Image (tube, rainbow, N blue to C red; front, side, top):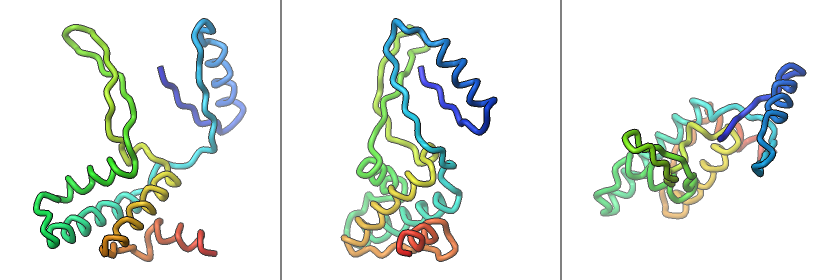
Length: 148
């Protein structure tokens, strides 16, 4: 069971407290509390997808013919984001099992996406692939904030 709450005011805080009181205390629970950040932005997503195309083209030119943009994206997520366990239920038998699945960038917040993109940019630079960083995009703005 997983629940996610965003606390904005006393009403939403009360809803969280009510939920906590409803938990079965014969089971151990883990609760993580962190400052809320918006989901990754469309600008970040657009820049990252541009990078997968640029990196793919670079690698293909270096002789790695199978590195399509889709394969490149998946490989970058494998390398820098990793996996998360998901519970899946067989609809015929009802049997549940845990599977490991690549994390999705759509589930990252803006800070997590920025960190992921920093890792990708650094790796790309190290192999000689200079990815495009639009100066009007959120990634560029975050880099500028970090420098100042």
